[in-house]
Amino acid sequence: MVGFPLNDVDGDHAAKIARLSILSSFSRLTMAFTQIVLPLFVLAIGFDESFYGFMVAAAGYVQGVVLFPAGMFSDKRGRGQAILLGGMLSGFCILLIPFTTDAVFLLILYGMSGIGTGFTQTSIDTLIADHTRKGNERTRSYGYTTAAAVIAAMFGSFFAGFFLDPIAFPFISQEMLRYAILFWLMASFRMATGIFGIYTERWLSVNDPNGEFDEEIQVEESISTIEEETTERQDTETALLFGTTQLLMGISSGMVIPYLIPWIYAAFTPDLIILGSVPAIANITLATGTLAVGLYSERIGKIRMISGLYILAPILMIGIVYSPWFLLMIVFYVARNAVANMNRPVFNSLFMDEVALSRRARAFSITRVMWQFPRQTGTLLTAFLLLSFTGIVEYGLIVFPIAMLLYPVSVIPMYLAVKRNARIRENKLAVHVPA
Image (cartoon, rainbow, N blue to C red; front, side, top):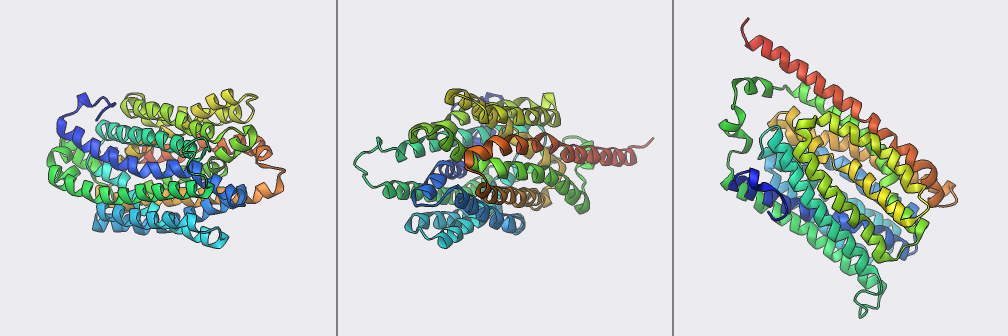
């Protein structure tokens, strides 16, 4: 896979990670387009940032409702079928969005797209875990796949801003046609995710048929068998504690992230091609940081790595909203985007290590549910709060830094879960090892 140092793994593993990286990239491309296209489309058809918040919240709530059923479906029917179902459904909904300007229909369409997203995201993350070894290999694999997806997102957000700018493709004179083309591209990427997802699972079933069921992976040491014995209750409690971390982050993220691009657009009024370049530039740093975190977090310590990054998040947010110059704001934006997001390989790897394989998708879906509902509540709350402020710029100056303070606090429940499980494993080991 070009651009990633896979020389430290064998060819079969490199081929496996390459396919999973392409799958992650297809999925991430739609989100990259949405970050630019959706808020600008809402403004272009006569609505405001508040209605945009309602759309995002609607999709998030629907996604939250289906996450647990999606996890059960994925565990029983397979990751590929879940990804295919999700990709086709969300792609079809996105395809129809540019054909209406009716508020209710827009809410319904974008809300229903959340069903597909729920099936897709949970199964992709779980598929990666199913075919990688616990510990360093899994963390690195998440690092590779996430970095590849972020690079894809960089091109997606830049192209979206470039395509919407009137200087690009001047023969497309109608603004709504530009939006329609982008929505069709977004739908195509989402459907491609579904198709490639089921073929990736089939390829893995042939070339990596046992995955983590392989005896070499599961029983490398006699102690590993003891450590892998987790009860359904233990996995549920682990998921709830990790979910509490996600809950706190979700509230904070929901009040800030969907509104950052509209805030930048209102505060600095850059050209659309420049606006699209801001998240694109941020994704370059995020990809590098994600890869570095995936490669070195095992040495530093996963909890310690996440804690350090999250402490920086509110500090950098202050720099974003109070920067007097656009270029300085971009510096802080790039840095905040990196520290708040490049821990994903660490979080996913850490969580997947803590729960049993047979309950992995369901347990992971619990954490996603506990992320989705608070995140959309934060987005919805902001949509209402915006009605009380003179504008989104004033809102961001006051609320954005305060909301980001929840990021460092969110590490505590996750830390408690890991320490609790370590004590349980130690007790089991004491029982199995004779005095």
